[in-house]
Structures are given as structure tokens and as C-alpha cells.
Amino acid sequence: MSPVLERHPILERPGHRPALLRQSTDMRFPSGSPVSHSPEAGSFFLQQKPPQQKKQEKQCRYRNPVAEEIEETQNTEPSEHTNTEDEHYIHDLTIARLNFALDAGEHQELELEKDSVYGAALLMPQIARSSKWHRHLTIEAAWSLALNWLNTAMQFWLLQALAKEDTIYSPFGGCMFLCNFGEGKLGPSGTLIRSPARLYSFTDWDMRNFFRHSLLDMFPDQGEAVRSGIDPGEHGVNSHSCRYFCVTIFVMSTIKELYLIINMARLLYHVPTTAESWLEKADGDTFSGETALPESLHVCLETQQYLNRVHVKVAGIPYFWKLLIFFVVLMPKIVIWKLTLQTGTIFLMNTAGSTDLITNAVALSFILSIDELICEVLLSRSTKILLAKCDSFPLHEVSDHQKTDEELLDFLDKREKGCEVWSLKDFVLMVPSQLAITAIITALLVADYYHEHCFWSEKDGWVSKPVFLPQDSSFTF
Image 1 (cartoon, rainbow, N blue to C red):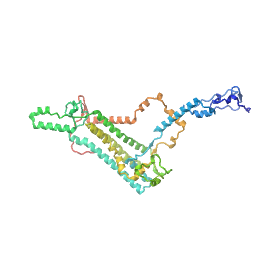
Image 2: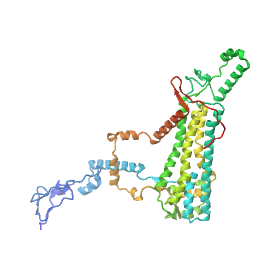
Image 3: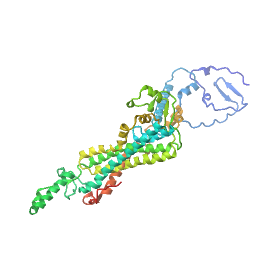
Image 4: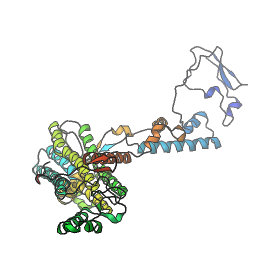
């Protein structure tokens, strides 16, 4: 055995640590190798050639200087270099926590539409099934499905009325599609629109043409004087930029519905296809977060004490119910959204006045909000309470959210930081996805309008296709 070594004064210097003592603790000495001590050097060395030190594994470029300081020395004297490292570490850790919290892909949840009849039509049948078809809850489920059917019928009827106006009644009145009729171009009568003074709505322009033709029929010998003295004007768009801008606003108002459709489709896909219960005993006796009941429901304290002991959650759905929800709830929702976009775009593109364009762009979005109106007015109070209590469905386990500081720093390290590491992908991501989707959908709808209702003329540009008198006023889906 080696003799007991006395501590040399050089080792007592504050903040001093020999070089070999800073090496990794993973270094091992070979068995049986004698060790000697050099008081002059204040370090340990082997009497034989030491083995090569293993290459350290690559670690995160962030480190904890506080922990390293404890390992290196117990010196309590303040160090300006150490304080600077501490500040950098805390700053990087703060950024890592913020990035992890804002990264939707790491902890995203799917929830029902709590202010819509679509959410009630999905929730209440599963609540009734979980309660083994209790009489009261079964009635609430049937009423929710009936209101969902009423909402679908009302939206389809309104869309049919708008489409019938453009497809049936306008051709009966001789109204053509506007296309690019406007100032600086030829109008429907074939004359050049030199100023806004010659632009009229279709009703006024049609009436002025009728009056002019009546005079020509009554005084055929004065035809030249009537034609030169009476100008019926032209029908066209007051502002092409206003028309495109209003179509964009209308499309923007429907993007929320698109995200709700995607959310419901993802919910049906990710939820297990098993008959799990959506009701269970609650762990606590207090409300917190999203499960808190809104004040508009006016739930008294005594009732909340009972509700606090019940946990309503999104769980497994049997295969039959998934098919039923897909065809009864999701598919009509998709079709209504698509028809609203097409019908609304045609309606706006055929609107000439700027005031009418702005008013109609805002009014058309009302069709997609009928489900929320039905939920607010016709849905029962019991169903609203269950919708408010229903928890969302997490896409990841709770353990995935529990990250240590080292894992958070590694999370930031993988995503890099600072402008010096930006790539082309980062510049593409600077364009908001909602704006890109809105622009793409608007461009497709406007292009579809010109393709279906207009044709290109080298002389006059986009002009309306010939409009023929309908055989009758019937209009099918």
C-alpha cells in the first residue's frame, strides 16, 4: 500500500487545481500500478506510461458552469469570469424554455368545438354511450344530432338561394357575368367606358336601355337623334382592386372553418377505435384551466361541487360511431365550406358597386357561423356544461412535457439560434401559413370564376360568355 500522503501547501491555494485533477473522472489507473507523489509539482504521476485517455463523447455545447465550479473548487471568492458564464447559461436556458413552450409540435392537443353544434353532435352520443344510455343523456344526444341536421339544412338552403340567384334569376333578367367590364374597357353594349360617369348598376343600365329602345320603337323616324341624344351608359365594376380585396377578406373569414375541419378530422384519426368511457371520477375538487365553466352558464357553487367530481374527456370511439360522425357531421361540414367559398366568390365577382362589395364580403361569412348561433340559442344548458367541461385530447404523453434543463438546452441546440445560422427554409417560414393558404385559395377561386364564366378576347380582354334564357326556374343540388 502507498504511504499516507501529506497535503502540500500548494494545494491549499484558493482557486488552484492541478491540471491532471481537472481531467475526466472516467480515467482509470491500471491495477497494481504504484503511485508516487511529487511535493514540488503538487501532482500525481504514474511510474509507468499512462494509458491513453478515452475520447470524450460529443455533448451539448451548453454547460452548467455552476455545477463545474462545485466540482473544481470550493472557493467562495467571487469570480467575474464565473458570473459571466452564469449569466450566459441562465439566458440560454430561458430561451430554451420559451422555444419549447411555443413549439406547437411538441405538446399539441385536439379539442372539440365548444361553441358549435358540431362539437355537441360529436360529444353527446359518446357521453350517452358512456353512461350506458341513460334516459336524460340519450335525449340530449338525440337533440344534439337533430340540431346538427337543422344547421346543415339551413346552410344548404341559404347557399342554394344564392347560387340560384346567379344561375337562374340573373339570366332570366338578361344579366351577364361581369368578368373585366369596367373603366377603360369595352362594356356589355360594346362602347368604351371612358369615365365612371358612364358606369351604372345592372338595374339602372337595363332600365336606361329599355327607355332608349322604347323611344326608338315609338319614333322610328327619329332614330338617329335618339341614338345620339340618349346614352344608356354601361354596366361594369367600379373598382377591380376593391373586388379582389373583398374576395380575399371573404376567403380569410372562412379559413377558421378550414382549421376546424382539419382539427375534427385529426381527432377522429388519432382517437383510439375502441369503446372507451368519456366519463370518469375526477382526481381533484377544483376547476382549473380549460375545464372551468364560463360565467354565462350561471352554475351555482353547490352544483359545481358535484360537477367537480366528474371528469369529462375525449377518449376512444367505436368504429360504428366514427363512421357515423364522418358521414353525418364531418362530410356535410366539408361540403358546406366548399360551396360557401364557390358561391360567395361568384356572388362577389358579379357585384359592381364598391359599397355592395364590402357589405356582401362581411355578410357572406354569416353562413358559416349559423352553427354557433344554433349552439348559443337552441342548445340545452346541460349540453353546454358538458362541452365546457370536456378536456382536450393530447397527442403526446404527459411525460414528454417534463424536460430537464440539459434536455431543454439540447432542444435549443438542435434548432440553433441567431441570424448567423439561418437557412432558406427559415426565410420561407417567415411567410405565415395562414396568409399563404388564403392567397392560394383566393387565386384558385378567382381563376375558376374566369374559367367557368368568361373567355379571353385579344381585343377586349376577359368578357362574359353568352348567357342563355333558362328553360325553367328549377335548381337542383
